[in-house]
Length: 536
Image 1 (cartoon, rainbow, N blue to C red):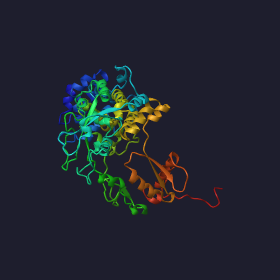
Image 2: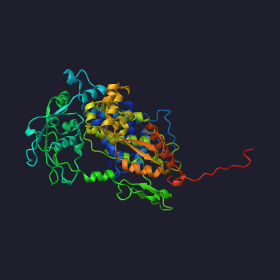
Image 3: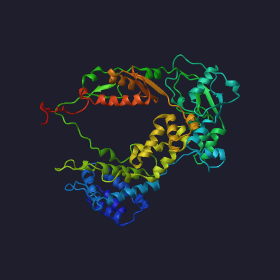
Image 4: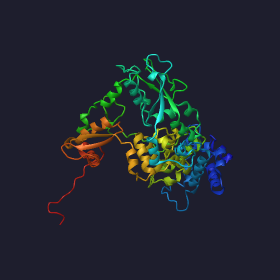
């Protein structure tokens, strides 16, 4: 294995010999994940498949074709892939060995909190689903509100004594309003801080887990103590007046400050303007011209799409994004090398046909050689499922960073179910994440009590005119596109609102956009030949 690795790193053309030798070793010997990791073959293969330096001969495309010929039995005269005689056995074996290497090397930590241990005193009984939600919403967190030692402008709340109990889903901004209503601080007429603190929307458990010295100093090994401390301990929150200068980069103003609440809450003019901004409608869009949407445009939401006659656009190979020597996101883990090579092999498995686009006879099929399930990692899927089942992590929206990084870097190693669960738990806010977690744990058959405890989703109702559907649909999406509220559509002059009319709205917009009169799609007009006398 080491000799093969050295041969693959040679700058001169060594032919297909090292690849054929590696294939023979894979098929005839029981190569362990340990041997694969420490022989240097992984880094050599990555360099062989991704390096575009002119010093390395032959060129990369020829090296890729040689790899496809040896491991995938693909030749210019045989571009109809069929695994009738086990032609892809070597390729599938290499993928399997890489998955075993990832399982052996990965050190992604699953952080779970056994809420059942809080009641029983041990970790034998776990609370999940509706039970965890019921426990979470029937307990309160005790907090001490203290003026920050560096602040002399504001008054002490209750002369520095006493505590309050808050619901777990209470946000930091709600505590700020509580102090303002009791005369502790005041609202300034203009934004003195220069920006908005996104942490004001954090709930108490999220802020405590993120900023509390006890939580930050813990290595996560004693999850029972962490979960118990959230409810048993009294947490101190320091408040101070917002300064005119930009706030320091540090998240903590005091070693014992779980989170810092500012008593000077600005009205946030820029935020209000963003919410109430009236987007201009490009009238030319409805005249049949080609436009493309641009998120980066400030004055106009649409940018004209220029096309030059007789000019062939540049073609980017779909395989190139996968042939990189590093992951698209930074991940610090011993299994990164195996994941990089897995990305390369997945790209070759899916876009192998792009290697032969310059042949006289192009490939007759673009189907992947191996099914997507061949690239699934059982261990990482189990870890992802375990992490997403932790109620406290989902409720506080404090999932480990590796969950999202891995899905961005190598989504193919996760099943569709795992990726969908991560989407539900991270992309649509805390309320929808809790509803999904309860429905998934209880099989969608929650009892009446859990249904009452489940947070109600915010709803936004709009009225649409049928005779101006597309224009008003665009205005609605521009105005509410960034909102997490559930959209309910009703048609003006018609009775009824809710799920039914909303579905009709989306289906009607879909049909309207497909009309040829808008000239949004490439195609040609088709006229039907109809005889006056009929078919006979």
